[in-house]
Amino acid sequence: MIILIPDPLLQLIDFLHEPKLEVRAIALHHLTGFTHQSSEYQALILSKRKTVIPDLKALCREDPITAHDALKSLINLSGDPRTLPDLDDDKFIKHICLLITIPKSILADVACMLLSNMTKHEPICVKLIDAKVTPLEGLSDSTRLMDQLVEAFHKGVGKNYNPQAEFHFLASVFANASSIRHGRVYFVEKASHDNLAPVTKVQIFSEDKSVIRRGGAISTMKNCCFETRKHDEILDAEGTNMLPFILLPLCGNEEYDMDEFEKFPEEIQLLGDDKTREADPFLRLMLCESILLLTTTRNGRDYLREKQVYRVIQRLHASENDDKVSDKCQDIVDMLMRDEGDEKIVEVNEHPDQAPVVEDDEDDDLAIEEIA
Image (cartoon, rainbow, N blue to C red; front, side, top):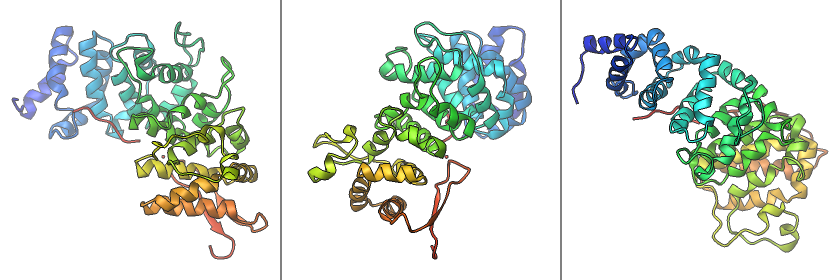
């Protein structure tokens, strides 16, 4: 590979806004390799971002090969938060989402990756949550853009909606969007078009084989648990019914006494001998933090006790080798086994990427993506 010196690189940047598409496409193809974080020239490209980003955004609307190079470049550059305000554009956000939702789009997965990075920027999350679009036949009759993304994620597993896409990175989009209250409210309130809370179509992937998909689903669930006013609905077995999808990844193949077993949520009562726990300690920690958040309301604590959740947590604690997860298990058991007459202060942090703080009254938010 020929290593360009800065002057020719600047010429490539200038070629990105040439009138002829062929010239722009060739320049983009050569420039893309230098947008990666490992490139010594990325800083130079970022210094020209006020012209480079608009040029790349325009090229995302061209033929699929050119658009793929433009999307790939934007994914790499959007790892730098300074670029995100330049991507905060209603029309561009909707175009990226259209690349995701239209059937047979060969650009859907790279567009998901870019949107994952873009939603690290809160104003983009707000625009995405509020955006209205035309219903898309075969996907959703909703006019909310987020509803269409959730349907693509839900229906698209196993390439069932688009044979060219898996939509895993939409899980990261949902995790980012639910990190703000506006997003959490969207996920836990029933949608008008189907009377289902959108989070119900995300939480079912908490044990998916893809760590991106299940990690984003788990993060979204945890964020939703910050909505203490919605804990009753979140736990309602006839409603959102989130608890089984929090507990399932934490369950192994242990045997329980019948009187305990019968009180578990139905979904975790008949697990096979080959059942294994979530392998990633960071995801186990988020799941435990979700349960701890649910203990911040009295009804939540009572329901978790009724469902014998502390028994699952005790078994997890006995096999856990990660200190942070073990400590969180102890916090959960303390909250569930204590006498309700013993007052404790439970602080729910305003930032979903931090766990709640639980204190005795005596003395005691998925990674920026790049394409190589």
